[in-house]
Length: 496
Image (cartoon, rainbow, N blue to C red; front, side, top):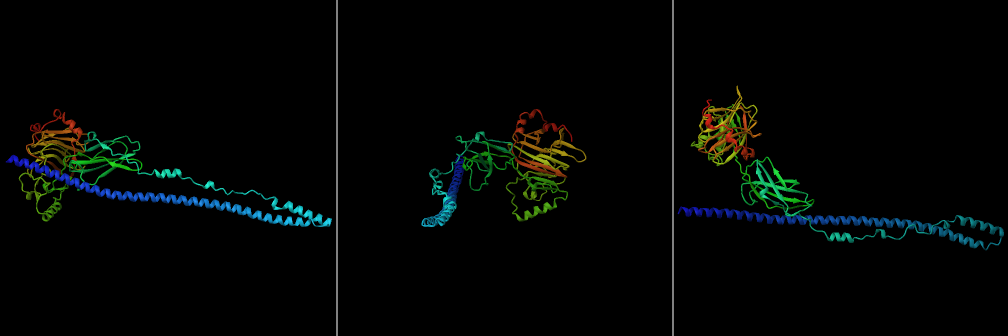
């Protein structure tokens, strides 16, 4: 009966998953259909604009050519009219002179005839008809303003849509996720010399498989990528996966997106649990500061939130031991000199890494892990339920590893930022210089119950960085670490 129920539960889970996948695909199809309609309308509008622009250019060119023809017509007409006027004047004068010369032939008196002949000779010498060019200054030829648009017509007949680059292909095997960086590599299905650059889009998601359209974050874009791979560095891995897609661009247009790929970017993300902190600490999600006023202002905010809420703890918060939530909500989880705050997420397995940076004026702080059963008066490292390294610059400088009220002095400089590596299954807690990845100290133990990141601070503050993968340098050091470090058992022989 039980095995049948388990089998049925698996079938139900498989069907529910498949239904969710189909629903997501239906939403994707509807979204794509809507996109086809919108984009078709857009390209039709752009096509109208392009042709209107062509018509406008042709109209402008036509008007310019018509103007040129009319200007040439006016110039030639003016030249010919001027020449015609001169010829008419010359002809009128010449006809008058001809008439005078003809009449002079009838003069009988020799002396008068001689006078008339001299006058005619003088007038002929000065007559404009004999100085006039009888060649037109311009011709009636207008062939220099004729056009032949046969080539242009052929060009217009070859108008077509822009050549679009093919979709690139992302190679998941060549993609690399390491050190909070993601390198995405792709190739073109065939060589295309006209490709100018690539565009890569990415987004975070908590869903495996095909990217979803509904209820997802917006795509972010990296433009003008000249090569066929790109590395996104310095990421916070606060989602289980990331989607990536790439498109090729020539000088004119971008091509289709590649098939998207989903890469795993899982890392430990947690916040500081305000409800587990000492009253003398001001706590936000990723920072904590010593508050000498006793946290009264913070306490009033907590009470105000409790009055507004239903009293149901956030599902993100992890209960501490067997203490009832009401006690934790009153913020007396730690008291006395245990200026402690815990992380809100328990570590129950796997390898995890986070970093902590202290303010420059911080007098004393501890960084480590603890079981949920850490007592309200217990300080980190002073019980067998917590492990930490402790930094003190008050009165005297000390830097030490602490566990079970035993201390191991560390003969290394205190780094600006401390990296914490917790291998729960391997029973190892190591501390590193976050910048150089130099090993500071490593505890070897066997964790018998889930642990919580723990922090103690006095006269100063700490800032927290989570969503980080275990650095490659740390993974490499793990292979040789056993022969280099002390262990929790070695602290048992060292008194505080």
